[in-house]
Image (cartoon, rainbow, N blue to C red; front, side, top):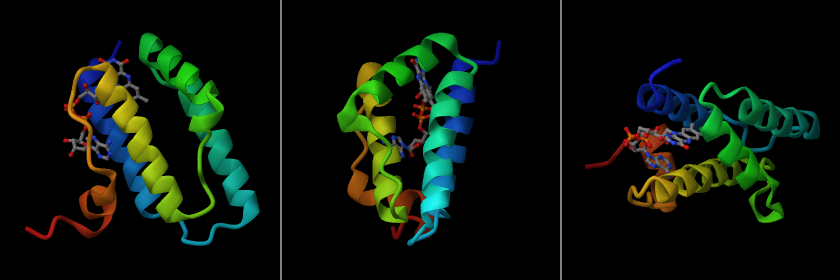
Amino acid sequence: PPDVEQLGRSSWTLLHSITATYPRNPPVSLQQETRAFVTAFSKLYPCWTCAEDFQAWLKDDRNAPKVSSREEFGRWMCEAHNAVNVKLGKERFDCDRWEERWRTGWKD
Ligand code: FAD
């Protein structure tokens, strides 16, 4: 099986990069496909215990993917990542800065 940390860093890079290039006004069809992608991703993620916990987190209605705009989807992904950070005893990331980190680049 792949290295869980390396897999994680690569996966978050892919996921946050997807939100950074997501349309500001996605058509409803893309919103549906995006929800389906998140569900499929949670089932296919090749770290089984990670995948189980992520699926359980997704099942809570409050954590349903928010995909109606780039801003919403980017923040939602940041919150998803923070849920894993908290579980692993890592620091929470300030989600006001997700776009700076993943789209526009740090200003300092
Ligand atoms: P990462 O957490 O990989 O973060 C990479 C970079 O993203 C950071 O350096 C920072 O710049 C930025 N970042 C950090 N937090 C956020 C945020 N909230 N929003 C935006 N950007 C942020 N590992 C396990 O050991 N057990 C698990 O159960 C587990 N579940 C996972 C579930 C999923 C869906 C994914 C994608 C990964 C999971 N991982 C799990 C891997 C774990 O999240 C980390 O990727 C791994 O531990 C490496 O951590 P890291 O400290 O290098 O930084």
